Image (cartoon, rainbow, N blue to C red; front, side, top):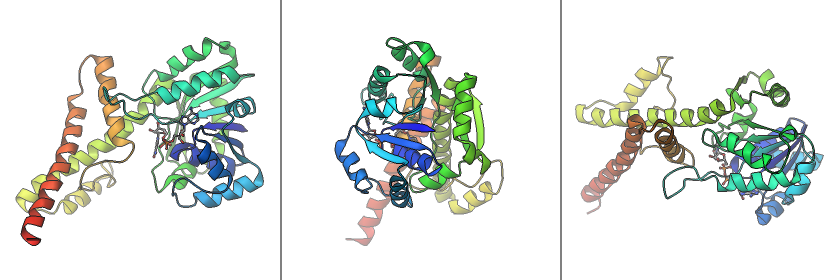
Length: 313
Ligand SMILES: NC(=O)c1ccc[n+]([C@@H]2O[C@H](COP(=O)([O-])OP(=O)(O)OC[C@H]3O[C@@H](n4cnc5c(N)ncnc54)[C@H](O)[C@@H]3O)[C@@H](O)[C@H]2O)c1
C-alpha cells in the first residue's frame, strides 16, 4: 500500500520504517528540514535499538523516502497517518492540537482522490469529528474517511512493540476504511496481534484510558511503598506477591520516583480535563493519581537531602 506518515518523531519514524519493512511504499514527511536531510543521509534523530538498520535497509530498497513536500506525499499515497506532537497546553493542561489541525488544513488542500486519514497522535475524544468538519469545508466527504489508530509503543522497545503488538486498535464505523486498515495490519495480526475495531471515539479514548490506568498502577504501588517503609516491609515483596495474581500482573508495579516521560503526565492531565469538560465534574481518582505522583517526587527529594545530611557532612 502507499502510505504517507506526517511527523517523523518517535511514533512517526518508527511506524513509517516498520510499515516499509512490511512491504509498503512509505513517504515520511516532516516540516523540520534538517531532520529530513539527516534522515536522507542515514542520520537518525533518536536512539532506538534496531531503527538505524531498518532505516538504511528500507531506504536502499526504495520503499522508504523522506521529504518536506507534503503536497507530493499526500497526492502519492492512499493512507495518511498523522503522527505530530500533542503536547500539554500550559494554560489549562489540555492536549494542544495546534500541530494536528495545521496538518489537517494542509492535507485538505491536496486531497485529489479517496484517502484514509488516520490519527496516530494521541488526541482527545471527538477530535476525529472536528477533523471531518475541517476537511469538509474544502473537500467532498466522499473523498476521505477519518480513522483513529492510537499507538502504544514504548521508547526503547518501539520496534518490537510495533512489529509484535498486543493489540491494534482501529476506530472507524466505515466498513471500507476498516477493511483497508485491517489489510495493512494483516502481517502483524498473523503474528498474534489482536485487531480490535471499534468506534472512532472509543479508539481515541482507549489510548488515554490505558495510559491513565498504568499511571494509576504506579501511583498505587508508590502509596503502598510509603506504608511499607513505616511497617518495615520490603515493597518489592509486595509487588511480587501481588503480581503473581494474573488479574493484577507484575508490570508497572515497581515503586520509585513516580511516573514521568513524554506521555503519562500529559495524558493523565488531558484525561482529567476531558472528564471535567464532558461530565461537568472532576475525576477525583485521576486527580489523586496526579497528586500522589507529585508527592512521590517530593518524598524522594526529602530522602536524598536526609542522606546527604548524614553521609556528606
Ligand atoms: N513518544 C512515545 O513514546 C509515544 C507513544 C505513543 C503515542 N505517542 C503520541 O504520538 C504523538 C507523536 O509523539 P512523538 O513522541 O512522536 O512526537 P515528536 O514531538 O517526537 O514528533 C513530532 C514530529 O512532528 C513534526 N511536525 C510537527 N508539525 C508538523 C507539520 N505541520 N508538518 C510536518 N511535520 C510536523 C515535528 O517536527 C516532529 O518531528 C503524540 O500525540 C504522542 O502523545 C507518543
